[in-house]
Image (cartoon, rainbow, N blue to C red; front, side, top):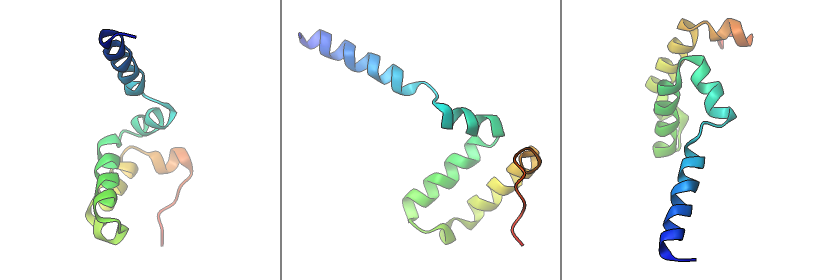
Length: 78
């Protein structure tokens, strides 16, 4: 395999990896993909959900605004 073939194969794999999977499709369908990404990134950086309360609240508000609590049957924590 030449170096050109290797780079073509790597580029093809990158395109395959860039396709939305089932998880991505579900997140995009909520209307809150950006908020989910920010929340996930916060947790990844800080390793503590308590440090991500603002991001969690923004995600929660988005979730409710888009009617996802009714669609999924989820309820707000008391």
